[in-house]
Image (cartoon, rainbow, N blue to C red; front, side):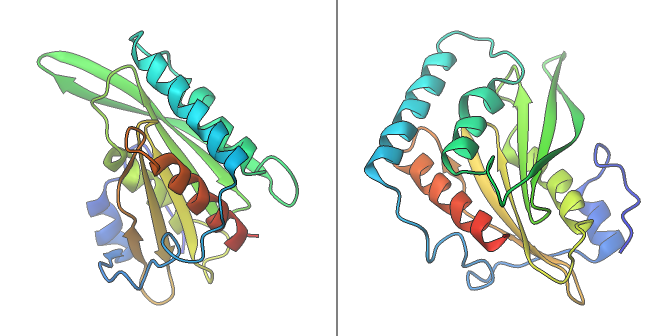
Length: 207
């Protein structure tokens, strides 16, 4: 399957019309974010608590600088999960710019995408304003996943704004099908620990 759309312009409607992409709502289709998750150790939980504390502290001093989501949230998760060590390797896709108008003010941001072992995509939606949700990144991450070099295998993704997290599964086969996890929030007690456990599990499936 050859992907011809530019990620910065793609919409879910484009992917539905051009590739027959179909949303699956059956919970059994995407069991990986709920079952067989690795145990998070007490040391890891303490580290993740510090990550939450640091992010909430940053919110007290707006506006957030671009890149703060990667620096304060994602990089610690990847480091703690061992994603910078073999057998993992990480590459970065070109950043995609996004924009929206709010009461006559143009709000801009970026979507940065990291690819882990060509089977796990991590997409970061960054903006100085909290106007962009993880839904803003869903068409972009799906477009990258549709072009993955191993279409015979399921692939997975994570979209985060720093405050919110959502996992994605894509299976191509005869017709591309995808599903999403529930939405996790960094302010919800225990959610970042669950996000970390799911991320580790999906990384292991992609090895």
